[in-house]
Amino acid sequence: MDSKEMAPGDIERRSFEIITEELGGRTFPPLEEPVVKRVIHTTADFSYADSLVFTHDAAHCALDALRAGATVLTDTNMALAGISKPALAKIGCQAVCYMADPDVAATARAAGTTRAVASMDKACGIEGPLIVAVGNAPTALLRLAELMDAGKIAPALV
Image (cartoon, rainbow, N blue to C red; front, side):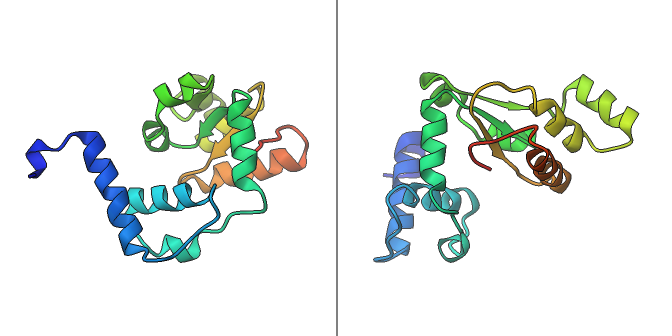
């Protein structure tokens, strides 16, 4: 079968088979394995099999939050684009990114800060379980930590 004849699902399935083969006999905890493989699939970097670290019970926290209808907040529209909104909708969840919101830009400008900081401030208004996926905005992560320390936001998972 050549690449022109392969359906997207077949391509993805074969990609994961190749990743499994390349990992050899390596095993990971059951809930972490699909995450490790997805990261490798996304980046084509097998070093993540050795360097990716999960805090205690992170995968369970994610599943619990998703089962409870979590909002997944990202700090970049690129990360948002990589999240399957139809898959989230099937389980009553949604994904958002506030970086391009006009109110976030105006707030950041007025405060003399970054849109990433202003977007984390806006996220404090999200109700229900929250999962935060930080991509490449370090000020988002720093502001998120400040807001968590202040008790203004409590993500189920970062």
